[in-house]
Length: 169
Image 1 (cartoon, one colour):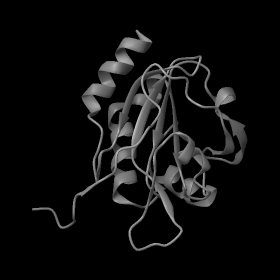
Image 2 (image 1 turned 180 degrees about the horizontal axis):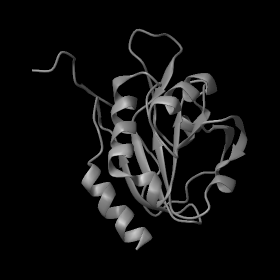
Image 3 (image 1 turned 90 degrees about the horizontal axis):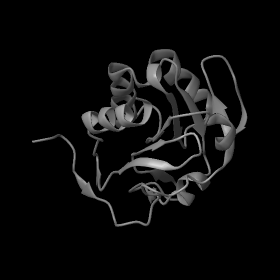
C-alpha cells in the first residue's frame, strides 16, 4: 500500500486532441536565464508541453526523470509549466530536465485556461495543476493529450514514445 492517499480529481473540460493549444505569455526559464515568451513563439516544430505540480513535489521529479530517461528533449522541444517561480525552475533544471525549458505560472491563469486547475487540500487560495502532457505540432495543434484523473497519477511513457514517434518520423 502506498504511504499516501490516492484522490480522484473531478471531471474537467480540458484541452484535448485536435484542439489548438491556447497561446499565452509567461516567464520561460532555461538553464541560464528567463524572459517573457509566448507559447506560439516557443513552438517551432514538434513540442511536448508538460504541466506538472510544484517543483520539488515527487510528481514533478518523476516526470522530469522520465523526460530525461526517454530522451524526449533530444527529439523535440520539451516545455514544462507549473505554478513554481522562475527561481524554483532554475533549481529544478540544474538537477534534471536537460534541454527543457519551463514556463512559470504562479497565478495559475494558464493552468485554468487549459482546464487543469484544482485547489490543493488544506492550502486556501493555492491552485495547482493536475499533471498533463500535450504533444503539439508546429502549429500548436494537439496531436496527443493525457490528463491525470487521480492524484498522484503519471502518464504512460510508452504511449508518449509512440506519439512522439508518429509525429517526428
